[in-house]
Length: 382
Figure 1 (cartoon, one colour):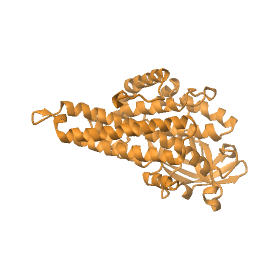
Figure 2: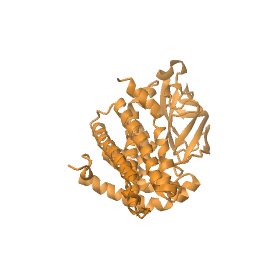
Figure 3: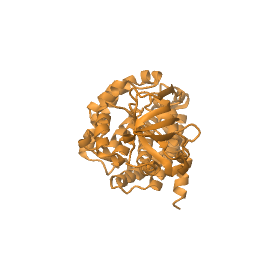
Figure 4: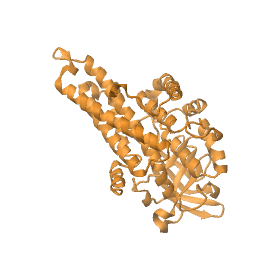
C-alpha cells in the first residue's frame, strides 16, 4: 500500500461524518472571527455555548453525564480538525478537566459538574503550573488548609488556558506541605462570586493569541471540602501522573495534524511559485526538503495512530505518551520552520497561514510538560 493511500485504522464512516460536521462548523462559524479574537485575546463566550449545543465539548464523555457518548477517537478527530483549520480554541484543558472528574470524582460530583461542562454552561481550566515551579509538579507552593467544612486555599497559578472565562478550576494544591508530592491534592473551585479568587492579566504570548491565558490568584479562598477530588487527601500527584498521558497524546495528535497541514500548504506553494522560470518544486533542494519532511510526517502519523489505538485499549503508558509528545512536537516545529523557509519572505507575513503556524506551534514543546521532561520520563524506563 502506498503511503499516499494511507488511512488511519481507527477511522470509521461514523467518524468521517462527525469530522465533516465539525469541519463545517470550524470553517464556517469560527474561522471568520479568528483575527478579532486574536486582537481581544480570547474567544467569545458564546462559542462555548455553540460547541456545547452541537455536542462538541465533551465528545468522549458518556451521555449519562451530558457528553457525546463517544470515545478517544472523537476527541482525536476534533483536535485534527482544529489543527487543519489553523487555529486552536483552548478546549484542551476543558477536556482534560472532564477526564479527571470522570476518573476520580464521586458520582455526585460527576452529576454536578460534567453536564454543565458538556453544555458550555461552565468553562473549565486546570491550575497546575506556578511561577517558579514550571514542569516540576512536586514543587507546588499553593496550599489548601482544611478548616471545618472548607479548604482555605492560598497561592498563585500561571499559564492558565481558559482563565478568562473559567467557571470551574481544577486546582493542584498541597494539603500537607510536609509530605512533598504525597501531600498534593486536587480540589475544584467554582469561581462565580467566590471571595478570595482573582484573575490576573491576560498574558502576552507570541502565539496562540486567541486562547486566553491568565494568571490566577487565591487569597484565603474558601472552597467547600466536598470539592476534594478522589475522596481523600494526598492523591493529586498520582492522579496527575495517571492522566498526563491522555493530555500528552492530544498534544501529539495536534502536532501530527499541524505538520500534515504545513506540508500541504507548502506543496501547493512550491508547485506554483516560479523561480528562474520554473516552479520551485523543480529545484533539487526543494524536492529533497519535501521528501524528507514527507517521510518524517508519515512516520509520525503511523506512530500516533498506534498510540490512539493503545489509548482506546487503556494500554498507553507514560513513557510511550512521552515519546509521542517529544517526537511529534519536535518534528512539528522543525517541519514548519523548513516549510516557512520555502515560502521565502511571504512566510514571514502573518497573512500567510504558515506564519501563524510557526508561532503557534512553538508552545507545543513546552506545555503538557516540557520536552526535556519527556526525555527524563523516557530515560527512567530504559
